[in-house]
Image (cartoon, rainbow, N blue to C red; front, side):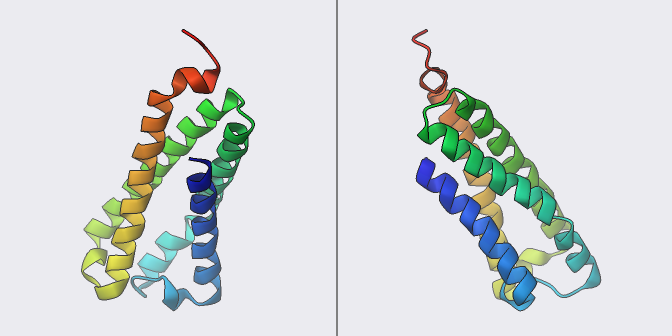
Length: 133
């Protein structure tokens, strides 16, 4: 899980480096509406990456706070994934060639990661809290 948390934070950072340096690498559309929508995500994605790092550190140190950071991360991933999916469906982004497929992959990874983190929290909650109950 710690490795995935680090990878996830790195992927978010890599996406934004690509967006800011050469948008064509990751953009699925070039309309003003799409660009404005994507430009609204940096703060939320920074939160997601930061929480992934906090969860990874807490998990590595075997701190009970790992449970809350993982739960926050899972919820944030599901929320951001839902926002992105709804926009993409409403604006036909998935049908826009390789860019649409990239967007679909990002959305699937985000939602599946959120579900996976929440499942991990549920399955290992006693161990994460250090409780023998």
